[in-house]
Length: 283
Ligand SMILES: Nc1nc2c(ncn2[C@@H]2O[C@H](COP(=O)(O)OP(=O)(O)OP(=O)(O)O)[C@@H](O)[C@H]2O)c(=O)[nH]1
Ligand SMILES: [Mg+2]
Image (cartoon, rainbow, N blue to C red; front, side, top):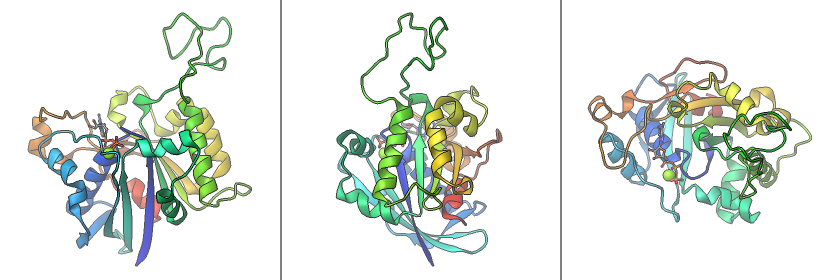
């Protein structure tokens, strides 16, 4: 049986926990997806207990506590009968960008970085921090992303266009990956989460990457082989859920009937939340 670790790289609030809950629900109950959990193939569901219980009730789960660092081990099989053991990490998102901020990679990350066969970079477009600079606001041209009349470059913290590039550079370095030749391993899936929040403003995931994160787009294209990276849209829930107030539709129809992914240059929604993971695992 092939062993595969997927390293999920997602900051706080990017949707890691809800994706894990929905993904696991799909892989356990929906026999039509690209990936399925083998009977008895999940080691310990208690790690996702809170999110699974909330989803059943049509509610959102809370922020993952800061000290959490765990993995969920699942035995899967794909459409064509390939068996894979997947190790899916669960951690609090602030731990990820602490690496960029402190310029050190704690031990807990080193093993997973070296052993992962695929990296899943989760980015939530609705909460991107993009500061204006002269490139988006040359002299005498009206700003595109802001109504602010003053031309101030906000220097508080990183601009996400640079932050994600820096993050990937640090991870490539920690993985011992040379950038002289375009990378084939690890595979990289850039996944834009909470796609439903975009309200149809963007046509495809590929377009979003090129328009909003051009530096990241250029970096990935020059660092990975074409067939070794891909970009996706993801809505794990299909709609916003609240913490206290249950969504009746969601509760009565069940979480398995909500959520979708979009492929790089497509606008059609695919209900199979396992597709991007299946692509990463090469099954
Ligand atoms: N609209 C919408 N909201 C979502 C979706 N997925 C998650 N959310 C919301 O986004 C927020 C963050 O989701 P989480 O899964 O907790 O994010 P996380 O990456 O685990 O965050 P940390 O635990 O802080 O690292 C929650 O309030 C969710 O309800 C989605 O597909 N659509
Ligand atoms: Mg979480």
